[in-house]
Image 1 (cartoon, rainbow, N blue to C red):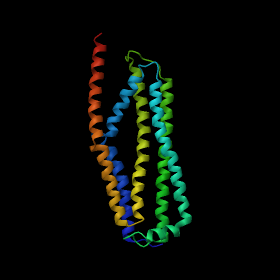
Image 2: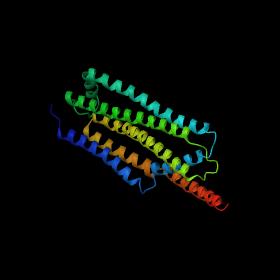
Image 3: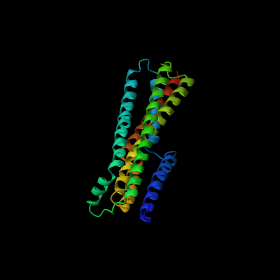
Image 4: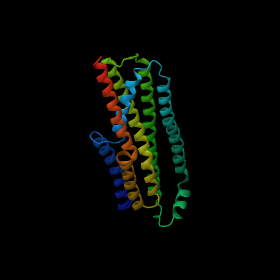
Length: 244
């Protein structure tokens, strides 16, 4: 089993890109406006508002919609895994297809199997993330069902309870995000079947795309602005309540 230095370098760059961006995004989100930071605050406001409602059918419907999206990806991941595993029995045919692609590197039987194995690992990781996200959303449903009504929104204990619900929901969303991120990086791995340099460029493209969408997109600007508006509204409500 002999791999070229370029293939080893491309695989190393891929791993460093994925792990490095994950660590970077987690650290940067602590003090920089981004989708994760903004939505965490929105989840807190949502759970605080939920505690004041006696009928929570609408909230349950919203959570069910989120769970359906995750269930779709979880089931799709199983189908993708089945397809990739099937390719292990059709490596020769896959090599023949790769050989017809212009500028593609000549297929190496062992290396093709490594590439397929990498895809399997990625989608197994994605499946675990999606299913863990689904379970955590189930935990949120239980906590919502257990939460008593606080019509005035003045109970500090229930406010703390609402924030804990938001934390669990936030962790569920992070798992969902990690699963989606695995899908993004799996697209880069497909480029490795063609050429390792294309694999390197695709990995870089995925990192840039993720960064722009999570930190620099118009959605981030809108979510951040909306967070400020909600913060002002809740502050005004709290001031009004204390002045009574």
